[in-house]
Image 1 (cartoon, rainbow, N blue to C red):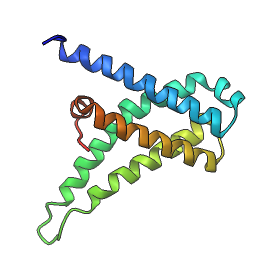
Image 2 (image 1 turned 90 degrees about the vertical axis):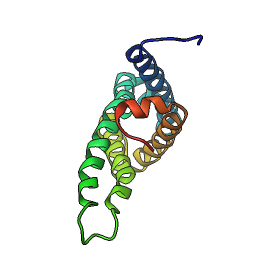
Image 3 (image 1 turned 180 degrees about the horizontal axis):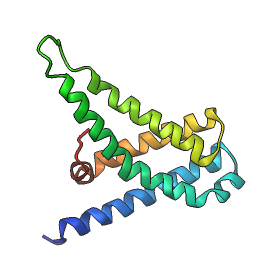
Length: 138
């Protein structure tokens, strides 16, 4: 075992790495989709948005998933289809955050949030320990 770290330290390192990766992708997306001046003016908000997307949104979606899972145990229910709405709710949360934090038009916010969601799914697939520590699985 080459790297034997404390699990909390390992989580913090992965969290910082994932936040930096998402912030770079968001910065490049704003740079290419909106404008260079908007990207340079909103650097702090891009980093804040990346941190929210990496840490806060998965916790909120895990809580929503837990609430929706309760409805799947109703006896007359055929199946729990509410849990299929969780990625859509996550996308809408990211869309609203991009729109109002970065102050861009809705069409630009749509493309930026789609790219962000794609990168987040890649990150949580490549780093499954981060997703399991946050309490949800993909």
